[in-house]
Image 1 (cartoon, rainbow, N blue to C red):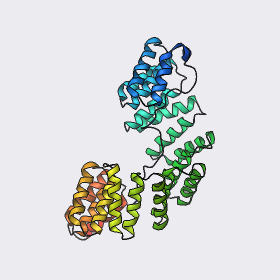
Image 2 (cartoon, helix red, strand yellow):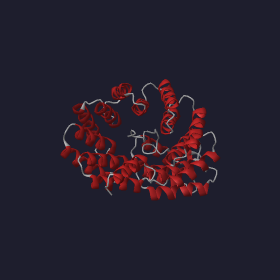
Image 3 (cartoon, helix red, strand yellow):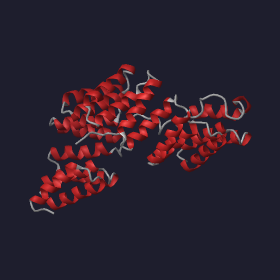
Image 4 (tube, rainbow, N blue to C red):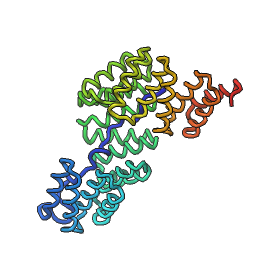
Length: 352
């Protein structure tokens, strides 16, 4: 089964950008001291206080697009998405040529899983400011999640042109090329990311996933261990290492690594399902089934977990139950070939 394919670097959940783009659309910042105070508080992630200052900035200058944009960004960081959307839409109405509110709106929509709406906003941001690194990076992110890989590649390449010293576009290009099974190019992009920033932990994790997919477990283990050297508590790195240890028959080590990953991030589905696989391989079917059921309770649409649970059930001789899980996997993703092939095989053996 493929590794975790969500290791794209993005700023969405951390820093919905707040106003480092110059003078306000209406009036200078010096005319509105609340904006400066809000910026200082936002930089320290004191969101409640920052929101209060940005609200004051809006009160002082209700027609200031920048004030509304910053307020929307701070509200979005506080996950008050509905109000954030209204503030960004107000900023756009006040200054239709202002690109940044479209970026924030796109990020909010993406956080809500509305990637089509997010994509439209990112495209508008790029049209308004073709030299924006952020807009191109976020555009590539949305395109990737919508499976438009070739367009995403173009967006990330443009971002790399705009900011050639930033590792992020290469990091994300490596993920896309891996999804396209162009592993040589994926490795090249991740290595370029490391040339630009030797401590970017995600590049090592992505390389570990690539080497896992190309059946080179020793190289994968080396990358996951390097990731842990940089970030000792990184759940993806612990889970990836455990994944490879299980492949090499070190079930005790595999179980330990998955438990470490889950201690850091209890809801991390790849670690949970990999723990179930390792428990089964170690001769603990009862423990494995319990963890599989927990995984599917937390992530009911995890196709990989459904398939691996079905494979486990097959090995336990529970063919009817296995067939049911394969069918559920196909309901979620009709293109899941491994589930379809397994279901066909069961059907031929007389299990429906």
